[in-house]
Image 1 (cartoon, rainbow, N blue to C red):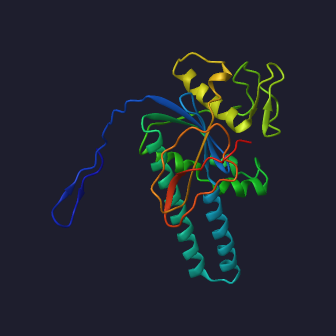
Image 2: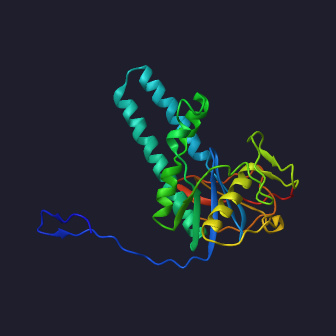
Image 3: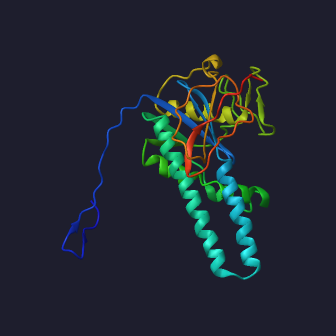
Length: 264
């Protein structure tokens, strides 16, 4: 229980914590990146959540705030700060609600990222620090945890370790990971999501699966975009929906990218 609050109309508020039992049927692991959340679940395959609309909102208001600051217009600057914050919260709330709808009985596993390290002058160059500061990973995790179970695992070497043979490379250079020991070749973001999943299952004492054929079930692309349509439920895709855009205008909604006419 929390502190009792006495209201003006003689009412009394007694805050307390409640426990909700959730029947978990699946696990989905998320690799947090600048422009996307890259997920993996054995029951679905890979999932890519597009964060570029959120980045666009942040970039637009960064420019507007810079202009207001240069002209010493404090009230205008504060207005843009508020609008940017509201846009970010709207995006994250819609994203959390959409993911909870798509994966209602799943445990969502994230890396336990230290945002201070990602924006530290000693650990990252200026351009990288600025990009890292735009993506509210902690806020996304917190909002999602209000709707579904969220677990965090250590982030060390998730994008450098081969999930098939366990080899750990010395660098993270390149978008594609190529294992010199077992010849596994995989996009680093997908690689990280698999390793996050395996790290969680190891914590739970579950057996390790080194069968890559069980991972390649296709890729589902979803995102939050300005759209007036109701959320469209997903269906696994067998190829990347290259060049797909959602249509419409209005508030942020979760959408499924349309499948192109021909696979590439």
